[in-house]
Length: 438
Image (cartoon, rainbow, N blue to C red; front, side, top):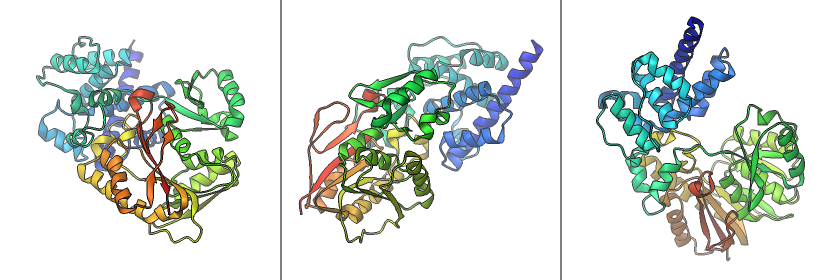
């Protein structure tokens, strides 16, 4: 019994250290929690797999429900923490952790043990996280009224106004989306066979059978032989849909302007059956280096990479298709990157919108007359999406929106779509398809 108590207290010390590192990095350095956790685990290799799961669950829960938890300490302490100085006492921090695990409705044994350690009573159950938050606050003697809108900054509520059903979006933000895989069509059968053999449960999306959601498993997807062969990529369902909007065909020439590490580039190459040309560009050489490795693993020979400075395109040979997956606020991936909404300000969103306008103006001419321009973001803010396209078309009458079929619903989209995270259990992503007339 004493050994068990000693081990649990060692776990608590690790959870506390990880939480301090994550909150300090999230607010002080504006880094995402998953990166901060990876750094923590690299520095604390003594943590076993069970310890890691508990530490990760605790940190993600605190980040996911920070909008409520941040209201529990006094305002001065909250401001200090959100300025990058995690000055919580041990008891304050671990109380927030106990509440976060209660809100997430997971790790109940650890949470109960934590409550015993802190000498606080257990909390009345609640059918929803909002009910559990109210019960938790009452149990620790805090009298505050909580709302769903607390889960994101005030500016975000205003920014998404009119674009989405806020209650559904905010409720969905409390649930982490599944891991989605994109299977290469030619290798679907052998990937599914290997997943089955490894005991990894999965479910295909009905309208897009090459997209499958995999259940949590002790098996590491990146150690599978099918991954080493490049038979599949980890790619969210919403992201996969963007390539389908492009409808890239064999033999065409495409330009992926903001390719990054190349998730959508690889999808275009697969749709083109490794025939034609794809030029992948980005301002970051390290991202393109990662793309080269992924393309080599998958055996694609029709992808070339080139760093650019973001300035106006001056090429001599325009493309059949141009994809601009623009830098954005990332609001559409807040489910996956819990807590990142608190790194963002209204000024940041306005800055992204201005940058997107510049990129569109600089690279639209890379599409040949009669060619296609695809614009996309992982945002659900209209200023980055529909309003951005309206402004672009007003400046560039040579482009017109073009109807396309929604890759997930099968319905007709009149030039734009917003993939719904709450409807498809994925990220939110916006896409517009435009045709250059002259």
